[in-house]
Length: 74
Image: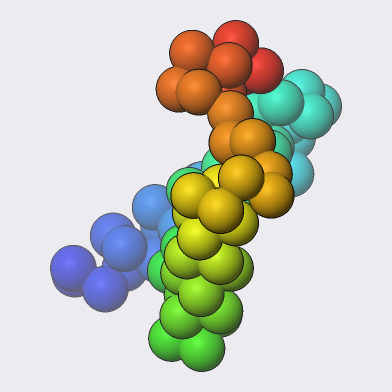
């Protein structure tokens, strides 16, 4: 019974996604689902890149955005 309920929930969600025409909503759904599909290597590569950017900022080679600037982009 539980399995059928879960399968029905999945099917209902899939149908709602297929019926959705708002690109913003679809992007948000994708963002929620993507972290679960990222590999350890991808996470480590992103972390490595972030560390390099912080180092370059400390060395004065680049200027990082402030939190306010990043939030204003949203």
